[in-house]
Image (tube, rainbow, N blue to C red):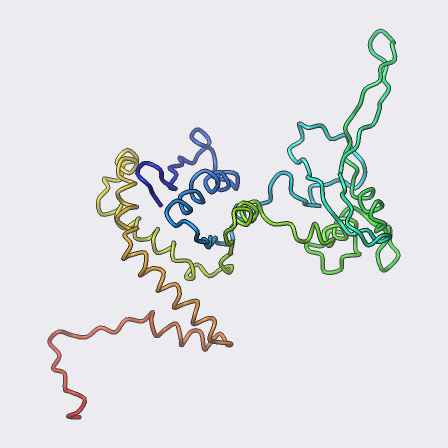
Length: 294
């Protein structure tokens, strides 16, 4: 998307000695500063559908998100310099059946003597820990179904049985379970739609064809030096992103999506997809007989 010099495209030179590595924070920044604003300027009063593939960047959580795996079991000093600063949350109290606001931090006065032996009192910011968080919700059980004492993490990769450990139990609480990724939060809060493509099905994502076309342009018109590529990258992307081409890429991806939607068996999908994947070549010298004469 582009309006004069305002473009949603970002040139990022990946590498340790360059711009670093593209992360979820760069994606969020690109959405906030350019993509969403450009769409709203080009298409006022419309709702955008933002589609992403299932990469780790697109599923990453914000630094203040409710992510139990970032938490400790017991209380711990947690200064503001810590990377993760968990936001306040709301849960339904078991005793009152009402919404309660819960903060994850408190201040504790620590007394310590200085070098001269004088007693000093200092306020230290503490994170409550998963145990205290669950106790405040009257949800601390302390043991699994076999009676074994709860650990922070049982070692299982997912929460099949939420009572197995403290971490999985907290993860299963509604406010933690419904935590959205950083990208989804930005898009939903802007009034637009967020969707993910299915895993391992890049054929459903038309941008793959766009990248392929852009690479073809680069191979044909670039002298294979980084300087030449950098100077011409915008023209390569513009050529591949011609509106007629984009529509064709989108229709092709929709063919795959519709084939998967109509079929219930993998073999059916293969046959359905073959209809628009396989090419039939006809010789220009072949004498064709009209069907009504056969």
